[in-house]
Length: 577
Image (tube, rainbow, N blue to C red; front, top):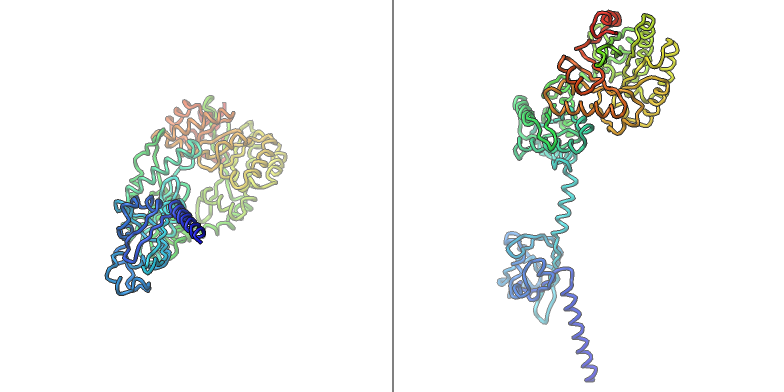
């Protein structure tokens, strides 16, 4: 019996050692305390969590470790120990601490530093005395990770501003609360060339600096978001009327007025701004943002700094669609006319080519610009008969000029949708054969936008056209969306620098840098360069210094009807040699 009793005692000691080891190596804090909240044990993990030693905490009250105040205590506890008369007046700890439960609450580290913890409390009896076991899990790491994930999901990684989804959520909250606000939609002008020519790193610098300026120009009540690309949106609360939003839009524009100082460049950040108001312009977040974007586009088209949305803007766009049937009739009736603008070689100072530009003189609406009716023709499918008419008319004109001894390359513009037409090469070849002209007499100008929808299909069609002997030019280079790396794979012969860079290169160092870089890059790929929008001798001289090959613009000659163009060739100093 004594031996068995001795073994039982050894087993009990071993068991106590094991329990002690488990408690000391537990991944969670373990604290025991009595019904008054007095701590009896405090394991190493609890020491690590709360930054107190066991010696410091044993004998102290558990309330030292909790950030809850008396106001947050539970007044009616069902715990049998707490409600017992002899403990009721003695308990200095919050009463909820004695409830068998799992809860998240605030812990207090040494120095009263608040930390998030998960606390599991279990009641137990040691003899006749009620005691409690508290298991503490430090939530700081998880909370920090959750906060980081929440931030990433709601903020733009480039600017640090809230993103589209978070912005729309806040707009919807304002609408739900029926709080009046004004929504500003701001988009940078000529941002894409910065991305493509100077690199995405420079583009990100621009977006970051624009975001900083917008934040510095607004108070803390304004919600500012980077929506996408170069577009920002601002939710400005409690604005009424029109004059005040217009004043604010002007102040936003002023924030961007001074050149942006980047690591390598200094450039201007021009922007167009559209405005909508809640509740006046709509009750839906998506519509309000769309209306603001429509207003921004109207401001850009009218070359204005800012525009406030009105329903006529959308109605105006819808009315333009009715022109589609009239355009089809104008094509069938041969009511469209073509003007030709000379392209002058800088070295020889003589005209070597011309661009065919379509004009539509509407009997009631007057002159309608191609910027309006070409997109409309694309949207309605009329672009197919329109392009067929244009190819035939220009081919016919080339034949007439060659019969007169005028041998020029004539360029026609293809719309983006044309590059998806499988029969386009055959249609071009048919016109060349019909009018007996050599393929080298015809150049096709395409925009970068035309390469985006289905690049592989567009490339295959361009290859077939180039194989026929026609030259291909990228028009308005720098305003599209394709990467510069595509150029080496495209069957192209010429780049045309957009006129926005030419007009800005004397006052904007970055525009001049872009012009020089495009010319150098094009020449390295064996391409010729034409500068559009040349308006002065100063433009000519600057482009001559950069090594540009050709110019096109009012300085040498405006677009002219065929007969006027022929006369100009004979009389102008820029005429043929």
